[in-house]
Length: 328
Ligand SMILES: NC(=O)c1ccc[n+]([C@@H]2O[C@H](COP(=O)([O-])OP(=O)(O)OC[C@H]3O[C@@H](n4cnc5c(N)ncnc54)[C@H](OP(=O)(O)O)[C@@H]3O)[C@@H](O)[C@H]2O)c1
Image 1: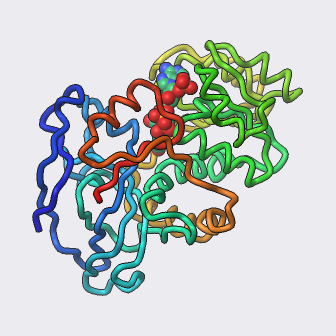
Image 2 (image 1 turned 90 degrees about the vertical axis):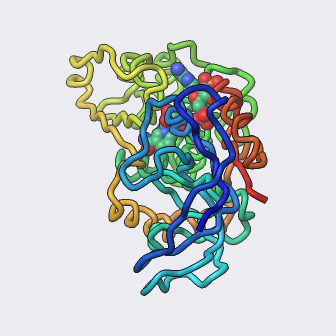
């Protein structure tokens, strides 16, 4: 079936974003076709557009989109988890900015009751990333201080809520003071720090012993200061390299603090790992949205045809929370 889709016509600026069409196959065994209502914009889409982050095998090379919400449009043989018309959300390796996508049915999560279908597109990538990295992998526990960089970002606004949900003490940085004011309702205002590249002293002043966990999307520019900010036996979990991918790391401090550095990505994981995460999130995260403990933070919702405007807005570091593109 041929459906409308956002396509990259080459590598470059927003001028390579075009509305076109793509062929979508019928669902195979255990798969479903989802009619996409909306898709969240991610930094990875911007990198892919610039030719710096190719789609993984199996994902369309020129149709962006790592997360979506929509309704079940067709079921392949032996697919029985969802009824046609059921509202679902999920992550994918690419292709979510087409009107329809085919995925394994067990990769999907239900749209939480009380969350609008379009708003649900702001949930999967950032909440699964922050939850998996900070809580499942770094083992953030109740009472522990956690430092979240770019706290007003999509991932940051999810991480702050998840930290509070497990009883941890979130602290956050942003380079932009006005953004901190906009997320003050999510975190304890005292824990928010404007970062000019130095933040360790402020973290120690607020915590006593430093941060038990740091969720970092900046990378090289913050590497040394992160180790300074970390508590003894702290865990630094790296999810991005917006401030550089290579640079010096004070290994003596790593040893002395008996610290751990973890690196992680969602996109390149094999299907069985994505299914395991989606099933666990269905059991543990979806109810938290339904109880109002978690909520997607949305900067703006634009029509899919305004994809170039959305990219420019995110690329200018102007968003707080998620930018979502909707089809209808
Ligand atoms: N590992 C994974 O699986 C995974 C999954 C999803 C996202 N990510 C990563 O997580 C990060 C956040 O993604 P997102 O979608 O939440 O981003 P976003 O909403 O677009 O926000 C990113 C924010 O980061 C800050 N920033 C940008 N460049 C920076 C720099 N050089 N140093 C310090 N801060 C900088 C800016 O806010 P300020 O005004 O506060 O500086 C910017 O608005 C990205 O690096 C993304 O690639 C990783």
